[in-house]
Length: 286
Image 1 (cartoon, rainbow, N blue to C red):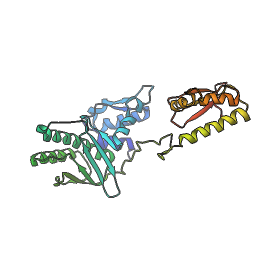
Image 2 (cartoon, rainbow, N blue to C red):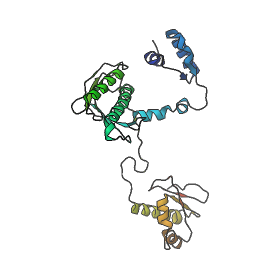
Image 3 (cartoon, rainbow, N blue to C red):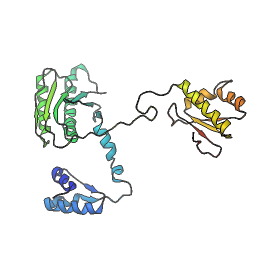
């Protein structure tokens, strides 16, 4: 029984491949041996990766995955796709982006953008293995000949797809419907991260409450822990709020606690983030 790497090579290897890099010697020997058996003339393209930098970082694989599987897929010409998934179907919207054209060649420009989008859509269907019903909203074209050109072009591109599929001609609303059989479980790669400031809720603590938190913690550090030479690190906006003006908050703290509190702006902090640093340049845990 073949392992996963050999199965993958069997399914996708074709004359267009110029290099196949492998990061481990054992897997390199296995793949090279397998390629020698099925296609001896391509054995030389299998190469052992020897650089110190991780192979995914060297070739930018993770960045490409994030770009390819996001909700928005950018196209080389400035147009972009918006891919939405629902329980019933998948929807792909084609947008011209920053590509503009005069009224005289607007139709031709729409055809070029749609053809560029069709090429990427055919690729996305294979990459994500999107199964079921796929509805594509191409840019409107008024000439029936252009709609037929696009339909034929998409059908030609889909010939590379091993999954069974059916493509319907554009409807009167310019929508193209595709039904496609899923070959493997659909790829669902998370391309967004939770905001560190709000934890994904979309809300942060009110700034007026933030200042209460800072003062309460400062009072505890100075009066309960008897710390000296304390530095407060905050977002630049908060630093300005504390230090600017004649009767600023920093000066009031000096009269209240009998010591000067240094306030340091950190542009990398989010708005309601703050930390207290001791005279030994260590963070004071609260």
